[in-house]
Length: 111
Length: 114
Image (cartoon, rainbow over all chains, first blue to last red; front, side):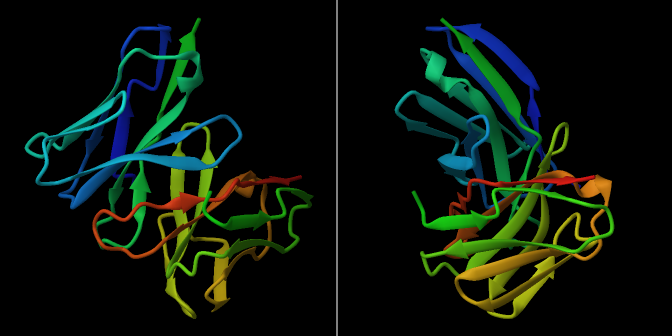
């Protein structure tokens, strides 16, 4: 079964607003990654947070990790129309051999 | 962009026929993966490889087989295609399976089984 579950499934905001997506997972992890997928394209790695980290920043992205709650959040600040995409969290599988993805959050940013 | 090429990019095939999808990488990464993406399910792991001739099953491996005879190529075969295998298939590669290794994805293959 899938490890990560994103929430919400879909999110619509205006340009300039912040977008927050959440990911919950089931088993202990070594790291959690976030990926982005533009329509019709492959996934692109955004950011990684290790299990011993609580927060990480990359440009307009902020990721938090709460291992006690088995959850992570991705915040995109000052959203742009170009941020319109699907966002997935991914964790290392129980055997540590392959990334296990959630179902994704579809973000729509309108101008 | 990481050097990953999937072929074909689009394919329509009939139920019951065998189909092979190819993933080719130029990065010399050890790990290669096949995922399928379906609405409402996100990405699900089919099979992966951790070296030449070394493969293992993922979450949704029934009806699929894989082969890796060279580092650069990872083939996914649908032994007898069914309509439930209509999907978008993604190949991914990673340098290792150590914690913190990111994966690089191909552009996907859209397969329709009629």
